[in-house]
Length: 375
Image (cartoon, rainbow, N blue to C red; front, side, top):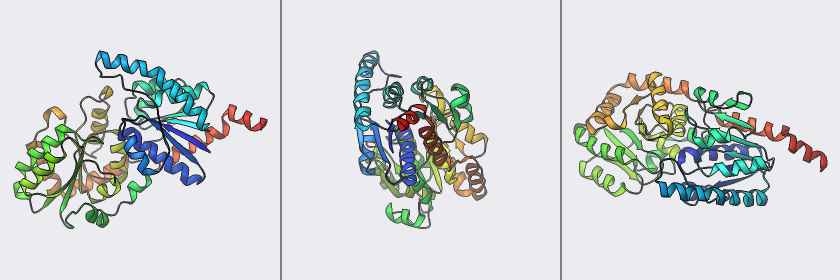
């Protein structure tokens, strides 16, 4: 069995794809999974470390770009179609799965035109433009949130949740403490703003340290900063006297979650899938420019269910964040209630459900069945 998983650009699109790849290999050790992405996406850094083949298409985002960048991106649509055709011809997959991001569009569409079984997965409550279009052509659509169901054709859309990697659930706290050089018995706040970091969260955390001086011996931080702010944030922790570890990028997310007593993060769908599967108390800061404001809707849903605190980007400052950290540290009952509510929203079985649907599609796809009869 050969499967192409197309998409990426950000961790929110890529990591669900990696979760699916692991599940396919778990079901069939001989399964070949090939990723398709772009040279400038996070997949170019992560996929080689994971040991999967990676092919590139020449694609670029359109939404939110300048006029000139949009013109260049439109020109690359044709190039990505050519690249996709060549990749499909070389790999000859039994199925193509699009996990979002501009790298997925042409691959899924060309696969559909070549009668290869196709499926897409929508992580967010508000589907992006690419998946709205691909939903018309894909054989099956899997969605994370109930709210997305009405966007896609009802006869081929499934509510599955967002797949997370199995190892995310297997992180060990003591191993994590050693890996990140953290103190054993200190309350640990894990801060990250997505795969590239978040400048506003980084700035606010530096300011928050000024309002937490009396907690220096009680709280430590693990902070994924992104490349740009790494040195400045690391120096701020050092000068403030707080213990902890800052890193540009954390590959060992299972261990990072295992070490955390509290998470401060954006509200991307993959992050929320991981947080709820693990039942981690969280302070969510939705990215204000997400398509269709989907991160705001994602975060508000968790707040309404008692699974997280939410602070919007425009109202965030060091004092506000410090107050929430204090509240979480002091309120054991608050943390316990959040953990229960969060786990109630989690879907740790999402990956298995999606692969079940995919394998059934491959088995029953009319073109595949005809090919088998002709072999």
